Structure formats: C-alpha cells, structure tokens
Image (cartoon, rainbow, N blue to C red; front, side, top):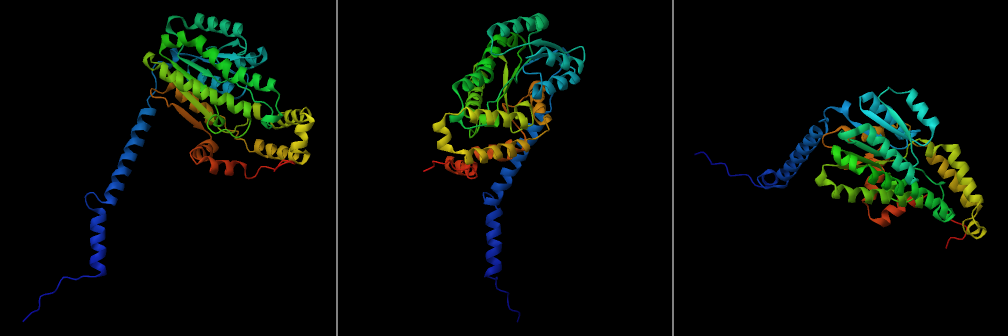
Length: 347
C-alpha cells in the first residue's frame, strides 16, 4: 500500500512563503518595483519635455550682460551660431570690438555699466529700438564680480558695496528696466547665481549677493507666472574665468591682507594667512575650464519649451555642493571647514 507524501515544512517552505509575501500584492518588492517604474516614467517624460525647442529662434532677441569675457562672451557666440539675434552688453569698447570680430552680423553690442542708472536706461532704449513690437525674448543677467578671496573680516565695507552694486542691485535694476519688453514677448529671464548662492561658506559679500539673486529670482518667478514670463537660475560651481584667474586673485588677496588692521592680523596670524593663501591657490587651480557646462544650461533655459527653474552647472555643483546643502548644518560645517587652518588666537 503506497504512502501519501506529507507536505514538507521547514526552511524551504519558510523561504518560499517569505518570497511569496515579499513579492505578492502589496508586498515590499511590488512597492519598490512600482516606485522604480514611476521614477523611470518621470525621467522619460522630463527628457521628452526638455528636448522640445522653441520655434522661430532666428526671430528672437536675447540681451546678455557681461559679454567682455567669461560665460557672457561664450554664450553670445554660442547663441549667434544657433541663429538667435544677440544683443551683447559689454563694459568696455575693447570687449565689444573683440566680440563683434568673432561673430556674425546678427550680433550687436552696446556699452553697459550695470551700476549706473543712466547707462541701464540708455541700454534699455537701445534694445527697444531693435526689438520693436516683438519684444525681448531673453534677458541673461550674467555680469558679476568677486571680491578678494579672503575672510569676511578682512574686507572693507567698500568691497561689500561694490559687489552688491554689480551682482544684485545692478541685476535687479536691469531686470526691472527690461520687464515691459519681456512681457511683450512672453520671454525668459536667466539669472546667473552661484553654488555659493545655495551653500554659503566662503566669500561673505559674494555669497550674500548671490543669495539675494536667488531670492529675487524666486519672487519674480511667482509674480510673473500669469504674464507668461519664465525665470531660470543658473548655479555654476567653480570655473576658470576672469574672476578666478590665479595670479590676479592671489595678488588681490595679498593686497587685502596688507591693508587689514593690525589687531585683525594679530588675531589670525601670518601662518594662518600663508596657509589660507596656499589653499586658495590650490582651489583656483582645480577650477573647471569647460565653460560650456554653464553656457549650455543658459542656452537650454532660453530655447527649451519647458526650461528648468534651476540649473546646477559643473560636476562639483551637482555631486558635491548640492547634496551637501541638504545635510544637517553641523555635518555640512564639519565637512567644509575640517581642513581650514586655525587662527593664532583661536580658543
């Protein structure tokens, strides 16, 4: 007489039951698969939306500040090759002439000092004469300066004022002056901030000005949404431009230290300055030379049907500073300052 085989129990049955429960309806595995599918669909949709390009680019005018060199100069040439009508604002006639010699007849230049109201008003009138009823499609607020790469206490108040005049007050005044033309075209505003406008840890005046750019941009974006004007913020990491020229920056740092009051020099000490000087030098030498990482973000903000609100430009920005900005403050402080030298009178 044959014996009926009994159901097996034990480890094998336990594993099967565990897998069935894990992957069954409502189980954790199903949940993670669903989440992965949703994330994949979101990324695919975002990729598709961001690839859609605005039509009739050859008829659109873009005004860019700070085109003598750096990001502004490269962007002007890049957009000119793309076929847009570029209105490039330079601080000097020399910079304007050099740019015109490298571009097509579509590009036009104007001299602009963003710290002077009369210069801004004259540039606005100049732009209006060229764009006419079509309005201004794009405004790129790129002009900016950096104070000596030193501690906030070493800077004179004049350095703070100068940085704010260019990086923030000038940007705001240019934007407000151009707004009627931008509303007419339902255009775009691209404000160049910095990763130091997201995570402040060096250069008190510069960081403060860029935090102001972020706040102004966020406010303006919400205020202008019903007019069809879109605002994007570009946050570059560290790049090799005129503001980060090694010899020039180190000379300005040395000059700032020489002008520091005696009691502040005693508090920090010469050894501290020497270590800081070397740290700044090493940091400047590591700046990226691929400026296209920034200008490509600017171009996308101007030409995409669906531009991003924020662009993080540069590998350091995307994979170090942005993640760091989400960490607890105490952790971020430790990571950023652990290698800094100690002042002579440190407690």
